[in-house]
Image 1 (spheres, rainbow over the protein chains, first blue to last red):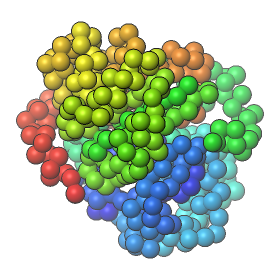
Image 2: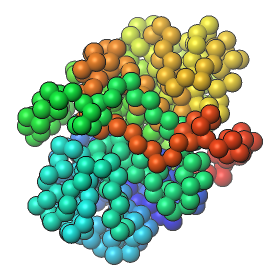
Image 3: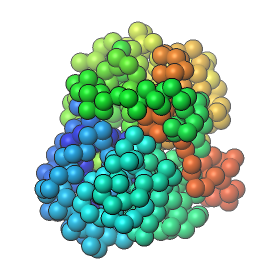
Length: 216
Length: 216
């Protein structure tokens, strides 16, 4: 079973690595980081490079595709090699998945039309313009398409998928190995739970502007 | 504020990236991935390379150090440049932290002697030989030393630290942005919660052997 995790300039590292280190523990899995060209790919803030070991052309029939998000996914959403690759490999995948705004990338490729999906809470409404029904759930499965909410939710998505693919015991084994017994010191991880004024503050931020000031 | 995340061959990616993408959102933080030499560093399974942008010699006074773990941390635990660097920078850090078996690396450097700490549940007892008191808690703070349990616990550790450094509201803001509202589909994330026979199975695994069969 081959799992391909897509990288592109501006991706969020945890979006990619959560599923990488969870799905990657599936018995018999081969996990590969893939990008338009092999070599280092910079994250959203420019302070991390993850190496793509394979080019898109080298990965033609992955069983699972994972598309991470980033605060500005317009690059991989545009017409181009990444979109074409997604459309092509999706024809034979068993599961096509995303984390965070990765669902916008799948949607822009036409893969979520008429389906239910989720995304980072700040970007959820953008799914509508692609004919996709947004839901506030943390992990959404519609057919072979599994989308996860913001950043950290990729771990929950991946554990769910391990269970679907290899059974409950395999998933519990992975959960135990990565000691995923979350105990966040605050309860502010969703717009429903966080202080309302904090949520409002973020809704008013110009995300493109935030990206510029945060980038290095 | 400079946050240095240490990389070494055989590290577990999620150990490093959980804190990277959580602590790194501290207002004004500069995060740098550091290794003995700059360039790509392979993970435990050999299927991922993260690029160290800086050499140890380039990072002489980080405010926070994060040491990730891996299934075989004997390399960074041995006498050598990594240990010497940790001992040196620890003199001026505000916080010295670890995830998973990263606490064994800190302990081997003599930094946790006489302190309480945690580690991945399978390695917890190994702390004793370094004069460190193991605890089963997910995040342990003893003075400026903050250690986290296995792999995924680095996110909880980092959020705790964001709260200590920048206050509750800053930590809630980070939690909301990374949408850390965990909803694991199973409740098997610790040896107390997982099925007893699964825990026993893992306790009987030869970890060095597991590493060999899992590596590529």
